[in-house]
Amino acid sequence: MLTDRRRFLWQSGGGLGGIALAWMMGQDKLFADERPGILGGVLHHPPKAKRVVQLYMAGAASQCDTFDYKPALVKQNGQQWDPGEEVKLFQSTPGHTMASPFPWQQYGECGKHLTEIVSPLGEVVDEMAFIHSMKSKSAVHGPATFMQATGFILPGFPSMGAWVSYALGSLNDNLPTYVTLPDPRGFAPNGPKNWSAGFLPAEHQATMIRPLAKEPIADLQPPTGTYIDPASDADGRALLRRLNERHAETRQGDSRLDARIQAYEMAARMQLSAPDVLNLADETQHTLEMYGVTDRPVHIADTMSREEEASYFGRNCLIARRLLERGVRFVQVWSGADNAFPRRNWDSHEDLRRDHDALGWGCAVGASALIKDLRQRGMLEDTIVLWTTEFGRMPCSQGSLGRDHNPFVFTNWLAGGGIQGGVTYGESDEWSYQPADRDNPTYCYDVHATILHLLGINHERLTYRHNGIDRRLTDVHGHVIREILA
Image 1: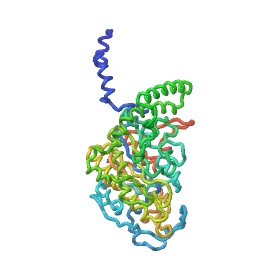
Image 2: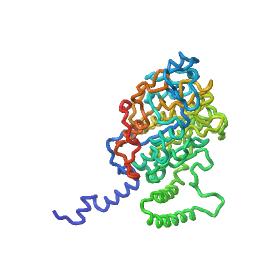
Image 3: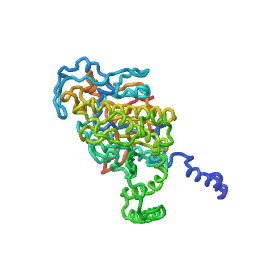
Image 4: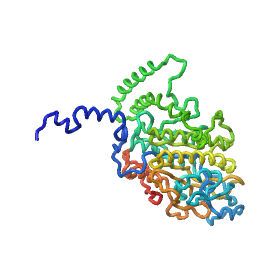
C-alpha cells in the first residue's frame, strides 16, 4: 500500500515531534544504556548484574589466616610439616606446621569461620560465596598477578575490566567505563599493565584515580599560574581534535589515536564530574565511620597500622561506591604495593602477624562497608563484588614467623549481583596446601566466566580477533560455577 511521507513519519515515530522527542530522550539517558559496547546492548542471556567491583590484594593474601579454617594446623602446630610428598617452595624449605596467629570464630547464619583480622566481614558473611579451591599457574608475583587480572600469565592481554568495557560499553557520558584505584603507596607487580586494554581498542583501558594524591587524576586540570584559562583550554582541545582527526585519516585501524581523541573529550567532561565523585563532604559521618575514613592528615607510614589501612582502603571502597552509582561499569580497588621493607603488601615472608594484621583489618573494614552500603542503596542486587589475590601462602612456616608462596591453593570470594550468599564451593585439603580434589581445581577462568555470565555474556562468545586468533578473557578454558549462583 502506498503512503505519503507525513503518514510514514507518523507511523514510524509519531511524526517529527516524536522523532525529536526520541532524540531528546536519548540525550537525557531515558532509553537504554549510553554508548553500548560491541554487543550493542543485545546480551547473550538476561543479566543478573550490570557492574563489577574487584578488590585485589597484591602480594598474596594468606587463605589459612583469613577465610580457610583448618583444625589440623592447630592440632599439628609446631610439628615438622610433612604432606607425604616432595614440596618445592618458592624461596624456602618446609618448616614446621604453622597455625594462624589470629583466633578463629564462626559468623553469620552460615557459621563461616573467619579470623579476628577479617572479623568485620562477619556482618556480611551471609552475602558472600567462598571458593577455597583456587589455583594459579605461577608462583611468581608478576605472572600470577597478570593471571588473576587478565586470565594470562604473560603481558599484553586485556584485563577483565577492559573486556567488560568492550562488551557492554558505558552507563554514563561523564565518567570512564573502567576505573582503577591503586594502593596509595604505589603499584602492585606489573603496574598499569594490570588494567590495560591489551590488544582491545585502547579506549577500554582503565582510568587511574589516586584519591589521596595532590592531583587524583593526572593531567585532568590545566596547571595553575600559567597563561591557560578555560577558554584557551577549550580552544586548544578543539585544535588538537582537528589535528588528530587529520592524522587518524591516514592511519586506519590504529585505535590509539581514537582513544586519545575520546580521552580529551572525556577529560573535558570529567573536569566537572570527577571533583564531585572525589568530594566526600556530602557523605554522612555514619558512612565515613563505617568505611573507616578519618580526617587525619595523610601519612603513608613505613610500618602499617589498622587505622591507617582501614582509612586508605575504606576511602577507596567508598569512592568505588560513588563511581558505581554514577554509572562506572567496572572499578578495581588495590590493597598492597611495592616490596620495600618493612612490608607494605601481603607478601609475608618474614612476619605474617605484622603484615596481615593491618592489611586484613583494613580490607575487611572497607569491603564490609561496601557490601552494606550497596545493599542499603539497593545496588548490591546488580553489583558483583569480587575479592581476589594472586595466590595463597603455605601452611608451614618460613623461618619462624612467615609463610612462603602457595600457588597450589588459595581463596576468592564473591558477593551480590546474582551470587548466592553464605555458601562455599571447592575445598582445600586438611592443611590448605592443595585442593581437596586435585583433579578439579578452580582457576581464574572459572571466576571470570561466572562474572561474565552474571553480566549476561557467554564467555565463549565474547572474542576479539588478534594475530589470527579469536582471543577471549577465558582463553580456551573456564566454566560457570553454577553452585554459587542464586
